[in-house]
Length: 134
Image (cartoon, rainbow, N blue to C red; front, side, top):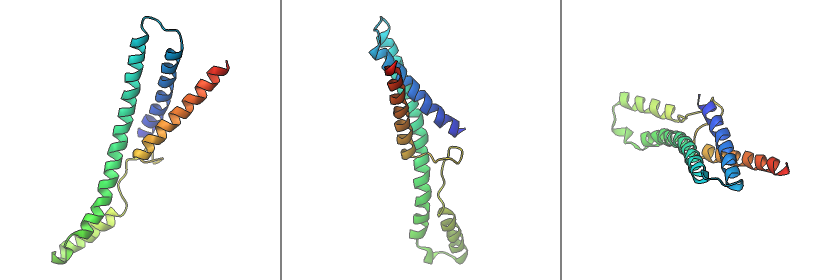
């Protein structure tokens, strides 16, 4: 589900930016500011939605990696043997951090957010170059 969401955000961001660029460079009518405002709001909405997914994924990754170091830093020598064994299991499990993935294709983090924006703007430049040739 999140893979479709990420791909949809990429395509929608590209097309909506293209439409906004077209309305800015095209003829200006009486609804120009309304169109521009709605398009800008929608682009911001898409960016915020995608950023929230990426932020939550980044936080989950950092918190799950911090779990291993927190278990390592505790005073394990003061614990009972059973508690120390449980601590070893916690450290072993925390070695592989938790991630939110998009179809096991990529994990949601800040790098993915910048990649989606970069890809959308790349597609936008291709669309604008193809339209300018006509």
